[in-house]
Image (cartoon, rainbow, N blue to C red):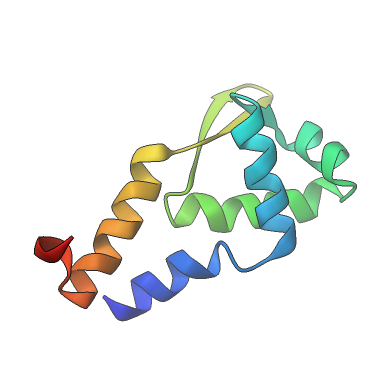
Length: 94
C-alpha cells in the first residue's frame, strides 16, 4: 500500500501535472489538444502526464471519437487520500 500512496502523491509533484489539474479544475472537461495548447506543451507530453493522472484515479476520460475529454475525478482523488490515511492508520483518528 505504501507504493500505491507514493505513486498517488507523485501525481502532484510535477509542475506540468499541476498546471493540467488547475486547468481541469477551472473547466469541466478539456481535450488533450486544448490542455496542451493552454499549457504551452505538446499533445504527446500532455497525454503522457494525463495517462499518469488517469492511472492513479486523479482524472477520468470521456471518449467521444475522435476526441478524449479529460476531467477531474473527485471520487478518485478522495479515495487516494483515504488509502493514504489507511496506510498511516489514521482513518479512525481524523
